[in-house]
Length: 398
Image 1 (cartoon, rainbow, N blue to C red):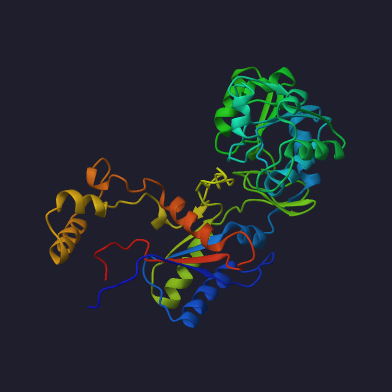
Image 2 (tube, rainbow, N blue to C red):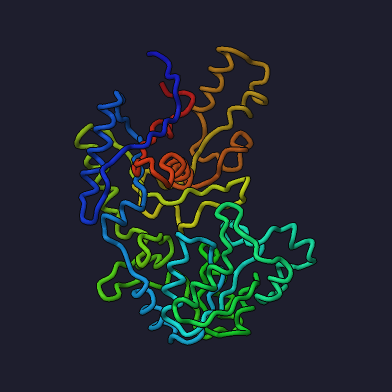
């Protein structure tokens, strides 16, 4: 048998523009099969078909409006003065949610993290914070104090002055606005005992700290839009988390109830090709930009739905460890044979063994989702489906 010369391959698959009500099982399956025929490749067992969450939510029609958010917030908070703390700095991810919140209350006390938000968007340069002798862990700054110390800093990538932008947005919705800067959740309780904490991955800890410190009502974004409001979309598990701006007055929510979708695509490919593929829905990849310091994961999870074969973490040997240690005296075919034998004989669980040191101890869905997010991009590539081949292969597979 001829030796395989290629390992993992990631392909963006072009699809039609998806609309509400479209049959994604058929569209995704047909698009992958058509791409295979057009490009001259074959599907194999354990290939991964990944579908971006945006087209899943779009096909479901899982949308809500600013007015829907406002009605839900008013019903759940009473609609008076509400603290809105730890939001990310994003026109796409949060601004329209803030419009909904502000439209449902009389006053917003907006508390921003500094020097950056949860996912790494810089509000102010950390060097300037050091120069001002400010301690972000303990110091609470008013809007006036922040401006006196740092002026009106703009986001290094977007050029936005998010402090002014969010303040103007709140006022445009008819609510009063007060802005403070702090990193301790309880700081907001000096202004109000009703709080919406907007952090994503630390939300449970933040809510627990607020309640312990005496907050009366605490909601996270995953407590808002958990049920339909006047026929709107919703997400019972994640609420507003994972939402994106769709229009000036509407957000697309994170997809829901999509296990039948991934299993349906898996079954369709098996019927058409005889191959057992894995399928996942993916959102943001879980990686950090070393230049801008932005952590990509603004969704609550990378993959909300996936087939069973994608549960778990990699179980891999580090080839360079074997080459430099166990088989340092071998070379050429002898080295290749020794490493191949080690891979074939490896334990089912390598946790704690030195030969696996340096391999990536992350969930398979997070790793593959990151690869898919980088492949599909977020712009005009037109490839909302990604086919990953060879991910589960190793050095011994032909």
